[in-house]
Length: 325
Length: 257
Image (tube, rainbow over all chains, first blue to last red; front, top):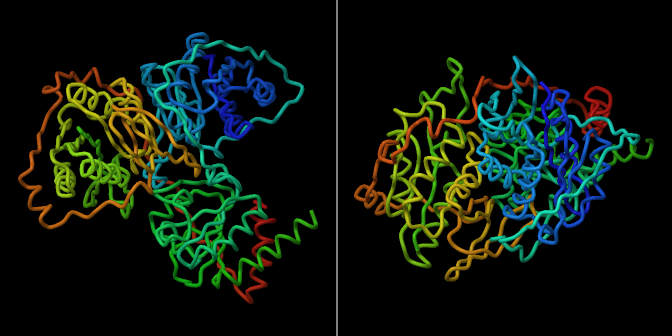
């Protein structure tokens, strides 16, 4: 059953986020041969249209306005709903990012539709589009369908494989004029604390530290390793509570749930709350002085040793590969 | 100021998940106030201390939820409302919860509604924004700071590590992010007082709601546990040899580098 599906292309800091391409791939699955239409919203986003098409979208609709420079739920929902009215889609996909999390429930409410958030897999089974999502922060999973309304989902970054880029692919990039008004929130200031480095939720490699890192300065060693591998730094609750780093880096049942290709846990004991946030990572490496630490029970590879001795050696060893490559 | 807190009772974060007959077993499990709702509640009490008014905490659940409501009253909430749906709704979803809460709140006078940005069980984060939309008020999610001056509110929200200062006005719904505050523990006098504070129990009938009106718009087909991970390889030998071996394994065996 072919369906028309809208997928959201999220622009941040002057670029399309990776999850936008993953949303196109998700849209293709839901469309079952139907049309995938990408939606781009912002003050100047037309330039990203071709990229969405090269990753598999059939068409692009852009909504541009100086009222859309910053994300607000009012502004973006007016823009998105105008596209929905024009296109009448049977499916909608957004990334489960800060923006997607904030916007999608409002859209679902306006469209009187069900919504399945934070999906890690999509399949066609028994005539249904079945979504898999973690519950209890990944301690369990559920399979769900939308039973009323548009097939509407948000997808967790890094889980659904984007399609291969095809630079020969072309498609229409059309703009829709929408009168964006009555914004009830005004963004006064954005402080970029996370300006440097890779976003945790989208990182392919995460180097995380716990109480064993012992100080804020101790995290510099982890940062060096993360930078070398093009990854991000994370932390356990213990490290955040001890003020070694900001709560925005916390991984666990409270904090972020992450699924990178490689998770390197340094000086983290492995409390059940922390494991919930990272145990679905593809490969886990644990470095800990205590051979009895629980983290070794979920690790693929473990080194029993002092992280301040091991990490510099790791940095040296990885540098050799980078030089060779 | 009329302050409402929407709260969910959840499994303690220490709990392991056990599945029985396709459902998550609650046998012997410890329950807590959803940690993000606890931040919301603490902020509500601090707002009341600063601006005066009353804090009402609402939950949807069954009679067991009374325990968490009493904890909220002991922390400093003034009134509690339990919307008991046990006999009426079996498989509600986020639409259901938002619709029931909206039906209750639309008849209340409120300046601000606070909740957690996500519950640590279902983890969808939908109820806050859905409820705000149903009540036709603005919302700001994942907040780490709020200052209210008259009708104006300046809110700081966490956006994937960046922080955004948002200017808006009341009435508003906000959802709490970690870092907003340090929730207090209930004091002994607080616990004593909580026993006498009003706790109202309502059912769908009392809200003139029919279960069909709030029927879920999504359906769960299956719940399962992830495949348990086998303990991996603990490397041996001198530390620098272990490091060399690890890098080689990551390249050739795990193929993640």
